[in-house]
Amino acid sequence: MDFEAGANTKALLKKNKIGKTISDTLFDILNFTLWVVILAVILYPLWIIIISSVSSHEAIFAGKVLLWPVDFSLIGYEAVFQHSLLLRSYLNSIIYTTAGTALSVMVTMMASYALSRKFAGKRFINFYFIFTMFFTGGLIPQFLMNQRLGLYNTVTLMIIINCVSVWNLMIARTYISSSIPNELYEAAAIDGAGHFTYFFRVILPLSGTIMAVLCVYSGVARWNDYFTALIYIRDENLLPLQTVLRQLIAAHTSGTSMDAMMGFFGDGKAISDAVRRAEVVKYCCIVISTAPVIVLYIYMQKFFVKGVTVGSLKG
Image 1 (spheres, rainbow, N blue to C red):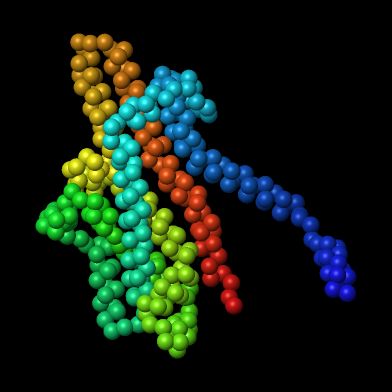
Image 2 (image 1 turned 45 degrees about the vertical axis):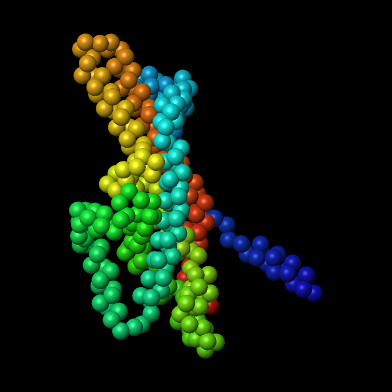
């Protein structure tokens, strides 16, 4: 009987199915075309950088590199990977990003949970956090403070600095307040759970989506950070990837500029080749530095899609 009822229901739905009108079909075509164009506009510059990094510098400056690599060449990558500190800096960036992001997400979630609760002085604490978004002590006081704390030129500083972003804190606080009902805390409190038990056993398991978003925000910011090491790190073995790549580009550019100044007395063709090779090195540096971030975005995409649907259903 159940099988027959199901078959009859499917037949009735199929019979009453409303077909698409011409307007619907036209809208679908225009919508699909629009998004394909937008996707192409976004991806084409990235594709140009990738194919330029494996093309010859002559083809790049001649404007021949448009859709596919021309005169395949790895001269740019050879110049980059010949740098003695590259692999070490890559490992440093992985360590700084992984440890710093984990610490940042945990501290942010703990602070956001505390701010989502009702307690005396909550307005003042909120104002204290938000005030730091607009006003800071500046670079020199921060440098002197970290130096006197013994954090100058240390791995610890690269991990704990900029640990909390107030913007991320506000996002996480709003998520906890709006997506996790207070009745869960009341039920947990009846069972004898305190704030720590409730946070680790209820809040964190239910906050996977926002934690993934925070991981992306914090991880990308830390991976792309070169300025912190430029100010605080003097040991070359502790430098992150972005700082080393910046030094590499600067070295090629300054070397090229020096050759250009001597071009009146030397080989003009050699000067021109040096300029073009420096441009290829820049493309290679972009590919090397952005590849992990792209992989991270692709992996975390499912969490972003899930985040869009959070709160769309009730019950």
